[in-house]
Amino acid sequence: MSDNKKRGLGRGLSALLGEERSPPEPGAKPGRSLRIDQLHPGRFQPRKNFDEASLASLVESVIAQGILQPLLVRPSPDKPGSFEILAGERRWRAAQRARLHEVPVVVRELGDREALEIALVENIQRQDLTPLEEATGYQRLIDEFQHTQEALATALGKSRSHLANMLRLLTLPAAVQALLAGGRISAGHARALIMAKDPVALAKRIVAEELSVRETEALAKAEHKSAGTAKKKTAARKSAEIISLEHELARLLGLKVAIAFNGKGGTMSIRYRSLDQLDEILKKLRRR
Image (cartoon, rainbow, N blue to C red; front, side, top):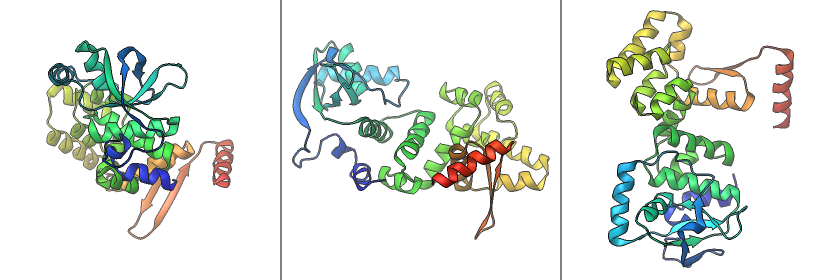
C-alpha cells in the first residue's frame, strides 16, 4: 500500500470531500453547480438499496433548505459532458424529487482506483449501509487496495474485531445472505449462524419461529455440543481473526485452508483435489 493511499484513508472523510478550511487540493473545483441531468450514479457505489423513509425525510429537508453539502463528482470516463457521482447519490435523488434543476458539486479529476476507494470509504463512514454492503465494502478495500484489517480499522475508526466479525458474514451461504439482505434476519442472527452446523436450516427456523439472537446462539452452540467430535470443538473455539485469515487465504488460493493455532505457533493445511491444483498453488507462491 503506498503512502498516498495511507494518507487518503487516514486523513478522514472531510479531506476527501474537500470540506476542510485549508486550500483546495490540485484538481479540485469547488463552488460549482451542475444540472441534475448531467449527473449519474457512480459505478463504484456499494449501496444497493436506499431506504424510502430516510430518503423522504431528506427530500423535505432539501425543499426547506436546499442542498447544504456539495456532491463529490468526477468527469465521466465514457460519457463526455456528464459527471459520475462519487459521494452524495442520496442528495442527488432527493434533489430530483424536490424538483431542483441544479445541485452544488465539487469536481475532482480522479482515476478508477481513487474513485472506488473514496466511494467505499464515504459510504462506510457516513451512511447506514446494510451489514452485507458494509462487509463487502471492507473486503473490497482489503482486496483491491491491499489494506490490512488493522490499518483499515484504524483509518475508519472501527475496531479490529468489528471488521473481522463483519467480514465473516461473507462466508455464510448465499441463502442466508439473502435473508440478511432482505431484513428477515439481523446481523446478530447472522453472526450466530456462522458457528451453526447447518446455517441454512437454522436461518429458516429463525424466520419461522421468530427466534431471538440469544435463542439462535444457544441453538448453534447446542449443535456443536451434540456433534461431539474434537475436530468440531476445536473449530468452534477458533477466534474471529483465525477464521478470517483462513477465508482470506482461501480466496487468494482458490482452495480450502485450515489453520490450527496453539497459542504461539501452529500449522496450516491446504486441501487440493488434483496434482494440477497443487501445481497452481506452487505457481502462485513462486510469483509472490
